[in-house]
Length: 196
Image 1 (cartoon, one colour):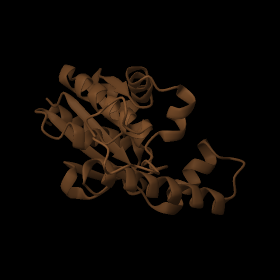
Image 2 (cartoon, one colour):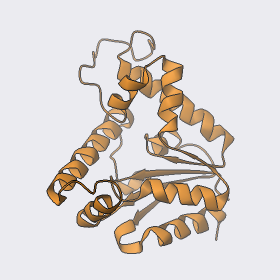
Image 3 (cartoon, rainbow, N blue to C red):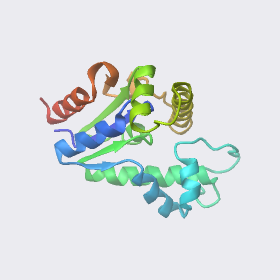
Image 4 (cartoon, helix red, strand yellow):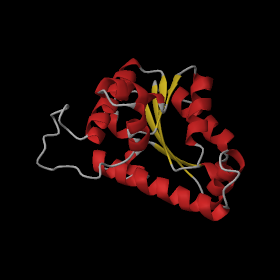
């Protein structure tokens, strides 16, 4: 049985919901945004700053600055380093589902892991977000938001891991939630995790 599942996702594709349901079905712990809270405490970063930096590449990173100097490094770097350490610690315990935060790359060498990417049709994602999270936004506003978040995640992934967000080479399994549906994605992940 796979004891560690990471889920990377396009914005609006249902990765968070899928992660929660997979964790419930397998009796695993679920981690998403609480990872940045733990990392913020470790890096002595305030929550307002953290929310503005979540999955964002540093604007003014000094290349002459040592990446290993935790306390003098830019805030984004300190947060990522702390978050990476938190993710590794969680990964060592296993029996967890971690959504986002480049966990697939950070934990790529861990045994008994399953790294999943959830993607979906742009229009399907827009309609899902309109119904569930953004009822007051127009379709055009939602699509613009989707593109912005996906672009930010691609840059974040490339900057910190030298991998490409959504490239199947960096995942064990890629699922299209718009064609399979959320329920089927959950079932497939659980079946693979159980070795069925």
